[in-house]
Amino acid sequence: MSDFVSSGHGEWEDPNQKTRCRILWRKPEQLASDVYEWAVKNGFVGSVCTVYELHSGEDVNGMSFQGADEELLRRALGILEDQGKCTMFQGETSSEDGIKFF
Image 1 (cartoon, rainbow, N blue to C red):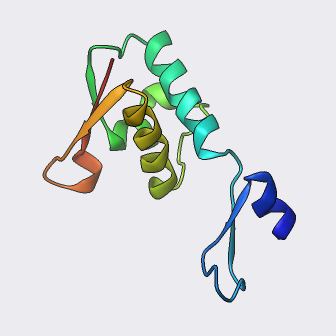
Image 2: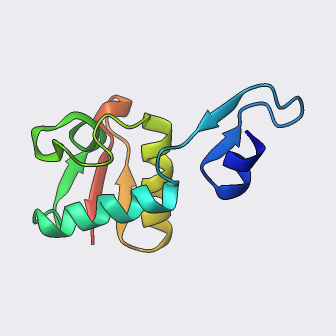
């Protein structure tokens, strides 16, 4: 498990005991890149979509982030937000939280 963690494809859920490790198929940075590439190719720059649409919408069929763990998806969106490529805003429920891509 330590090899997964050191390569960035894993993270300890309990870093002190190291008994539970989350294995990441894609690093958050890779997922962020995939999401932004999708947004550009599909005309979502300047538009708004929801976390639900990114996670489960028809437009994301076959994409690396389709059905991704919501926490991981939000981390990827946070990376994009830090890069100035999107902004997130709160909806009535977490799945209705919005993302506007720049």
